[in-house]
Image 1 (cartoon, rainbow, N blue to C red):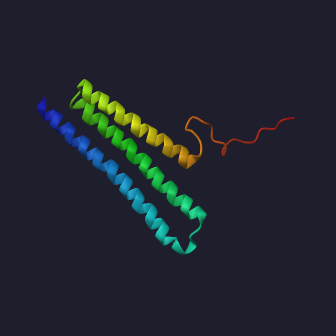
Image 2 (image 1 turned 45 degrees about the horizontal axis):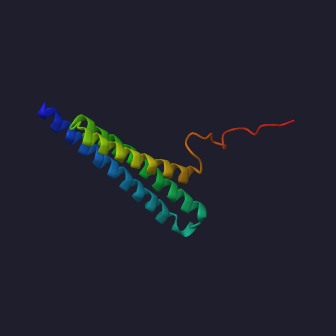
Image 3 (image 1 turned 180 degrees about the vertical axis):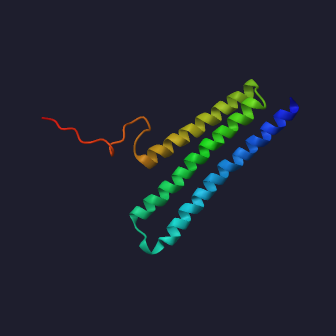
Amino acid sequence: MPNIVHYIDLIAKIVEGIGVLIMFLGLLYALGKAIISLPHLNHTLYLEVRQAVGKSILLGLEVLIAADIMATVVTEPTLKSVMILGCIVIIRTFLSLSLQVELEGRFPWQKSTTNTPPTRID
């Protein structure tokens, strides 16, 4: 059993690295996009760069949550570690929700107003 714990811990660390890499590469992509479009700097470019950075942070946070779950529940399932995991998940979920509201201007459970046809009231 100690062998599998070691491998799962290693996989969790790799997944954590992937989460950080996603955020870093997303930031580089957004900055590269901004630098290439620098002569045409306007408000829409700013919004596009902001969206790209926000989306990469959201995806990175989701991957980090998965890594924390793997590392905590599978390798060391004590009450203390599960409670710490719960706090981490709550904080990261709040951050993800805040970012999504900031990026989309609505909560995830609200219907999108862009794809719905206007209703006619007679």
